[in-house]
Image 1 (tube, one colour):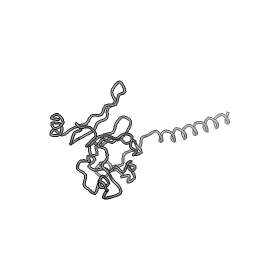
Image 2: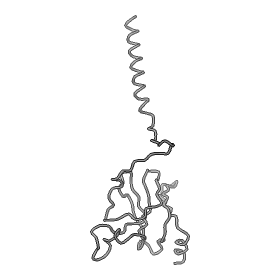
Image 3: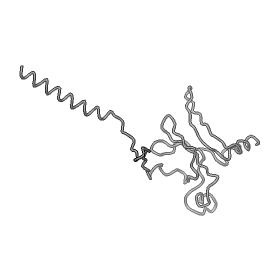
Image 4: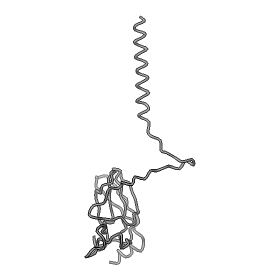
Length: 159
């Protein structure tokens, strides 16, 4: 009888120990906050990865995260300074940096998944995009919604 009690006690101890280990692993990590309760963030200087084709980033705006945790943003290239896109001309002023597309989708690792748009992409391409929202409809067709500034939308309608 004493042997059974010892085995039962040992089994209970192991069970409590395993439950304690796995129970702690299942709890989500808490967000770090400052003294006022505001969230703290850490910048990853190596994210995103370098853009392909010598593209540069200019005024990045309209950031959106879709259902796949892909990051979408607008790259307002029209307002780029000469040194930001000096690789555009012939001969180019600098070795790097040409005007990149205006709509860019990145995966979680910071790699470009899709990118398009901007001056010369389409004759009716708007001149002042404000935001981008990627949406997945019922029929699994991806729909991209671009928000326009009123003067840009009027310019598109007039063409």
